[in-house]
Image 1: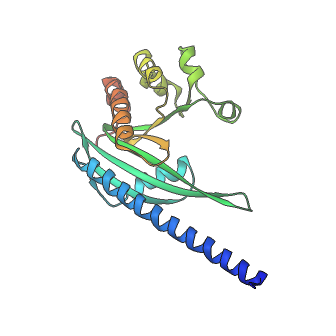
Image 2: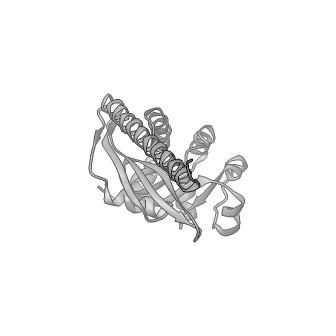
Image 3: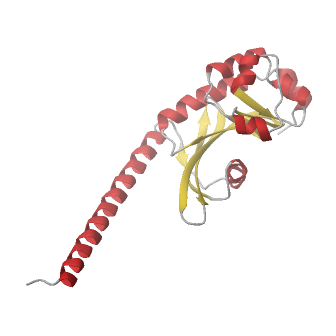
Length: 218
C-alpha cells in the first residue's frame, strides 16, 4: 500500500515536471518568435543594435528604472530611427510584476525644446499642468506638458491637432533631436510601421519657423 507521503511526493514530482516542460516549451516559442520578428525587421533594413543609453533614460523617465531588452536601428524615409524594447518591475511589497514597453525614436531636422503630448485622464488632470489649446476636442483627448505655452501652441497648430485626433493612440514627446513615441507591450512590426506613419505626420506638420526660431543645429 502506498503511503500518503509517497503520494504527495509523486504528485509534487508530476507538478514540477509539468511546470518545467511548460517553461521549456514557452522559451522555445519565444525564441522562435524573436527570430521571426528579427527577420521581419530586417526586411525593412532595420538591424539589431546595442541599446541607446539616451533612449533608456527617456524610458526610465516615462515609466520607471529598468533595463533594455532589445533594440533595432535603421531609417524610415530618410530619417534615422531606433526601436527599443524595455522592461521594468513594480512591487506592492507582497508581489512583483514585470512590465514590457517599447519606444520608437525618429530623428528630427533640429534639436527642439521638450514637449510631451499624452492621452488625457482624470488623474493627469488632477496632478498635471495641462495647457489648453483652441481645439476642445484636442483638449479632451490629450494632455500637453511643456514649460513654454507659446512654443507648445506654435508646434500644435490646428493642422497638427487635427492629425493627432486622427491618431488618438499616439503619445509622443519632442526630446532633443528626436521625436519619441511609446506603448505598452512588446513591439510588433505592424505596430512599428503604423506608429512610424503617425510620427512622420507629426514631424511633417512641424512648421519651418518652429525649427528656425526654437531649434538648435545638430
